[in-house]
Structures are given as C-alpha cells and as structure tokens.
Image (cartoon, rainbow, N blue to C red):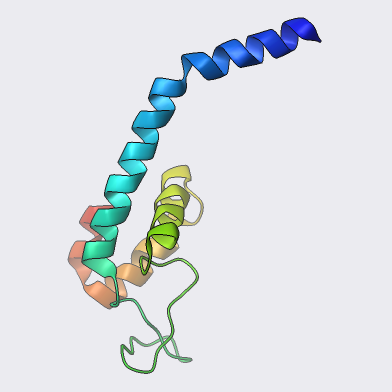
Length: 100
C-alpha cells in the first residue's frame, strides 16, 4: 500500500506543470468564449433564439465558472457537438471555428 501511495504522489508531482498549463488553456478559452457568446445563447420554449425572454441553457458562457465548465465539457468530448450546434444557431455559423 505504501508503494502504491508513493507512486501516486510521484505521479502527481510529475504532472503538475502539465496541469497548470491545462488550467491556463481552459481559462483562456473560457474568457474567449465569454467574449464571443455571452448573452447570445438564449432559447425560448420552442427552441428558437430569443434574447429578450429566452433562458440560457445549463451549458453557457455567462460567467467564468460556467465558461470553464463548458470548455472542460467540450474538451473531454461530452456532447460537444450539441453545444456547438446550439451556439451556431444563436451566434452564427462562424461559431464552429471556436469549437474546432
């Protein structure tokens, strides 16, 4: 058990630079997504874009936490194409460049 814990601790120490770099990339892309899509992705009950009376999905770029969560979800591949298509419907077809 001690050997296993030592190897886990060594691995965590070894990948700390990569984890910092990954966190930096997530932060930068979250800020970029917030500047592009904040306030533009709101839908009504019929699924049409409605910026005045619509509500934002759970996955959006409205605040920093949600932006980082959205970037992480796209990064791991969890339903990323649905997120991309929602943002393309709301912000235009050029939004696919951000997700690619």
